Length: 482
Image (cartoon, rainbow, N blue to C red):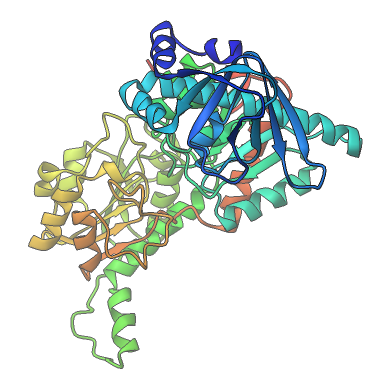
């Protein structure tokens, strides 16, 4: 098969040919019956095979000639044979058994990648035929195909509402699965994939996306630390993001965590639910006059500072870029991280995740802080060394921790784990049991306004792609940092 061999490296092709058994077969031989387990695929080396799909009395008939192959896709889908394959004339065929195929893939990962590329091309061609047929039948052109991964109901509703209001005609496939190297093949037939912070857009996944013809990754979030931009550039895949959706949603949620921890709201509510109306252990403090440290004074950090200023707090800020609007307030001061750690009653993190910000809060930082300090993180989990934080909480050094994000949250957050025996995250498991810790499932962004802004921005980027813009031409293009 010339189409298949075009995808194979020379050494992989040799290995494949070595695993195929050549056979002479007589006319009328039934190679496999519809519904039987697909234990082998067949290459027509010379002669002719007939595939018959017995769904009607007449059946559906396909002729396979020299150079064609049947049954290969079933090795990946693990489906039974969908048709009966019969030898039409005396022929020479190549037989590749499932067992030999699996051994071959285990020993040659590059061969697996080549097969996925080949099968994805076949899928794309089939989808293009379906698309053309649909246009002929309906008289309407099908929209730009978009694969939407990790599709939650609330996100889908927001995107469908935005598409309707703007009149967009994108053809979106909604996948509940997260995008990973194991699910990337599902993007076959789509030019754009839409991803979230929970997706694992690593080099392997990106290479597969490139192989199946994806040209754009539209991130429906501000962060993109889960995307390997270098691999995207190598595959000519443009990446966009949502630079700002609703900074107020996140800032207000940060305040919610501060006040809930300070005034022991969760403990108080749980007590009353158990008919315990005692006030012992529920003493908090006035926010007025306290010092709040803000690490990262972009839009969200700036709004968080302004809200705290409205409560009468003093603000210490740390950022390599100073916000002029905040500096105009006499109760705001930019200081070093060390000074912020030493003098803040509450510390709220609003920095992006970079090499320089990884584990901003670590053991050394915690040792500098005031006894009873409250720490809030609504930004990125790895800004905090979780093990160090857990030790500080258990020792009493940290008076409260409000965590909407946690290091190693992928695989847990956004999913219903209520029926699981537990989670494989020792620090998180212990933090959840602490009465002075509030952990939420990365929901700070989740307001109606934020969802509207996210869908508007993301679909706007996809529209720009549809109009022919690529790379830096896209308004919210993510540039690779060298």
